[in-house]
Image (cartoon, rainbow, N blue to C red; front, side):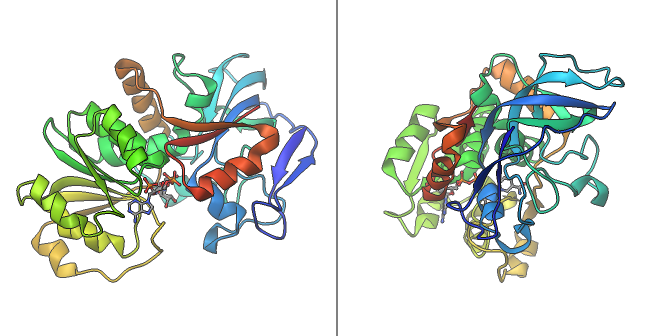
Length: 336
Ligand SMILES: NC(=O)c1ccc[n+]([C@@H]2O[C@H](COP(=O)([O-])OP(=O)(O)OC[C@H]3O[C@@H](n4cnc5c(N)ncnc54)[C@H](OP(=O)(O)O)[C@@H]3O)[C@@H](O)[C@H]2O)c1
């Protein structure tokens, strides 16, 4: 079967499409024929060997994928052949709070192979059925970007109708976050580098749109929009020193969901401001299977379709990575 592997040059161009043997099935596992993968910013970090995301040579990258069960082990009871499932980004985080044991072994990372391959095996508990109203392409976007946004906005958001939410950018996590914030009845403020992408936000129902290139001092706009209060909730996908800018526009007692690291891995922060404005810095690590299941119910109930930028055939996976590197609007997907 075909699979992509990270090569010693750690670049998109050097990703290798190789023939590997079919995975062996254990009694508690299912064999899944992959149908679609979606790409996340983190997959770029793995492929290019960035910092602690650098995997060993030969790693099959990409955390997210949806496929169909084609064979099941003798001990498997909850899944049947033809069930459509997604792998869990954090295969060990089934429910409850995150622990050191549950956070290890993320798919397509430094320690575990991912899903950019024609077939994959999973332990029975480490997949989840996906909503039937979604296409394979749409469902493939849920495990990382969808669930992270759900966790950051819905599980940790405490949003009410009229709450204000600041969303940075129009990538995968950002547009899912906008959808979940709108679902909760919140008033969304969307930042983007492009008017074209903001127009998409407007179509989705976002009320306040700011081009952060044209308005580099966007903090002022946000304070005007919120009549000086600041926003209740921020989806911080940029990270690094950008968190200081978020701290300038967060309302008293507001929450900053710290998700991204596009802007760097560390920053100097005004800790007095965190204290005196009672800011909750809520780190988000994707999410659990239990949260995934709640997200699926909401997607079904509100008929929310993930926003897809472009779909590439499996053979053109490198083009999909280049597109992600340039910047996506919503999700980039690879289809088999
Ligand atoms: N903690 C977790 O569990 C978790 C899970 C998933 C992702 N992440 C992280 O979250 C971040 C986003 O991931 P993703 O997969 O959604 O990435 P993505 O699809 O590549 O989207 C990135 C978007 O960020 C926006 N952006 C970049 N610089 C910005 C700035 N200075 N201000 C506002 N927006 C800016 C851009 O939007 P415009 O083009 O509209 O300007 C860009 O399209 C990454 O750092 C990723 O590693 C973390």
